[in-house]
Image: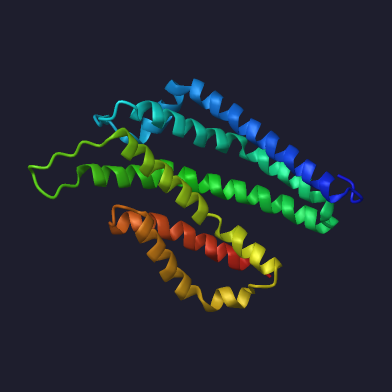
Length: 230
């Protein structure tokens, strides 16, 4: 997009990017919807042997299928959406800013995927097994609903993905002149406590083992941020 384009030309280009992004999301969602058996086999893998879910709402299974398809469709389309948005803003950036922005986007995507993977393989299975077997009284039987299971899985995945963005966020703040390495070193203890509190909030089990599973990787990423920040 040349620099001599008018405001309305830029607006039209942005509209084109948004429409392409919406179409990519729609195509990804339809593809995910059509792959129902494979998709839900993947989502149910952390459930464990012998565990079953219940459904008491006549529309819940279809609605859950739609919600999961939309989420997966967005994840599938996200690299394309980010690339198109980058193509829209790239002409306004200097050459070094373009290089940094590509590194920023790739790092953000990889770190988010790493957080989601850690939740899927480690944190969510431990959390679910704890919660599904916890009881306040022998007369209360746990019967986990499909919507409850999927909601917990999606929320924890998003939260872990966002927590893993710590290095990218600190790098961006350092580029803006807001953060310095000495600031990060000085407040190590405060940050560890803050991460511990956030981990306690987002992990529903409350047991020390799961708490450390969330806290330690995020704090190690904070230490990595100290190394990469100027």
